[in-house]
Length: 442
Image 1 (tube, rainbow, N blue to C red):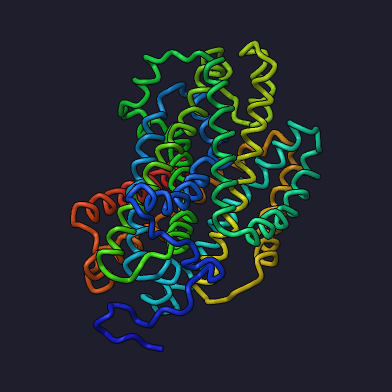
Image 2: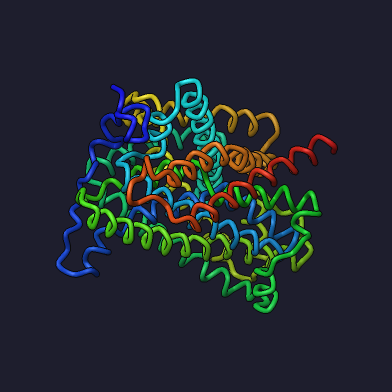
């Protein structure tokens, strides 16, 4: 059904994605603190995507090869993420659409369907990283062969179904608890590694080496792809709508304030985890000349002798497993939002999960069997670079929608926010073009 031209949308929105949890969580607390707590949660589901197993590979490789230099990339990409996720919340609250629905309702099919395919590709690349990371964690902790571990990850669908039946707040609580375990594991490992804090601080300062060194640029782009993840833009714009805020302008403004605060705090937490991985690699591997470490299993193997503590590898593996489990839940939701939003196909959760996971399992098993465990790190890093190439196809529509007063009404993005987001999109596209040129010219 066509919308009126005044709405700014080509067609009217259909039923919301994640219908089973849409506006299921009340937010009318007696005090501002209670209202904020009611909004607390979606940001941490989004933060999961900023510390998934694919991020580990790029951060480990970056820290091992270049020490603390790429910390500035982690910081810049995190600032990018905060701005973009704030726009996602703004789009959802202003229009009652997630990003996938907005693309479907704003563009003709010959535009929206390719965007859907690109989004599905990004989710498959995300899932590939989770499959490999979780399988490696199972191997490190329980000595399960990598090929068998990859197959076991297909059955995590039952965990997701169980969580969904418990309610959305249960999902948020379990994910936040696992994030706490990850933080504790890294706190202990960083304390054991005893990094040079002066060099850590200098690592957050900008340097031209990131642009002029092709190897550093490749890893930097991987870090951006692993940090600012396309599927997170769709995910956040969907799960913000689990909150039962009202439809009046004051209620929407309050919802936007709390949702933005929630995602900003969660992403600052994600930055500490991402920086910890890179700092651990720099203080442990780069410092001792182990500059080629990028495989998760190799990093696990070296931690005990280099740190002098047998508990360090176990903590590393536990944190990796928690990351894999968390990412599994959020990638499934993102996949559901993308499929329902773009093409309005509503599959059962278990079917959606198995289809996505099978697409990721095939290349993971093929690479493991043909090339062995040593090549999994290259596949992980490649998956993150694929994500970075897909980013503009999600960011550009997001920036355009939130800058349009016809589409957003009174909650249109301020000019400074649109300019900042446009600069972010331009930087990512420019980095992608430069990387393509570097790869083409050898």
